[in-house]
Image (cartoon, rainbow, N blue to C red; front, side, top):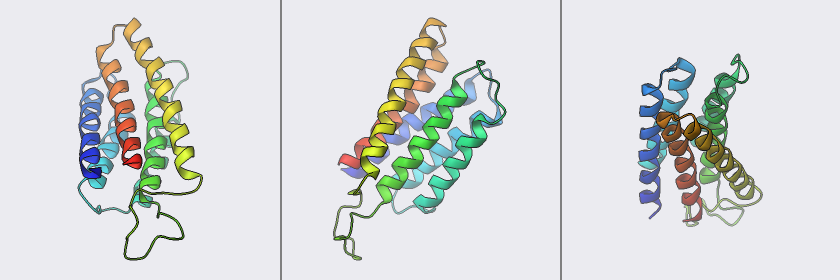
Length: 169
């Protein structure tokens, strides 16, 4: 079941990168984060992964900072949305990779996504906040009649929801 949820996150990630590439303002600071989120989602969805989840999270946090550094305030909300999406995905990646707690055996008898402690509520709060911002951004894009921006924001929000649902499965 978890594998189906993981694969389900690949579709919104793919839609997101298509929207990013199709946008008028396709810049390296937009395309690289979208591509990394797609690669990380694919890597985590198909099995144990080629790159450790901690490394994916570190790459995403670094890209989150890089995405917004030097961007002029007020031009567009998408750089901030991408940056926050990277931070949410980094948190989700770490939460899914966290051991089930002190009772988890080395053999892996505990469920792989049963992260304990404060990480799950913290990540859940991050996903919820991100979804509120995504909904607002989609409304702004709707007023500007920007279908591409609306689909881009919605796909990133959907990917966060699907990855968050993987924690509950």
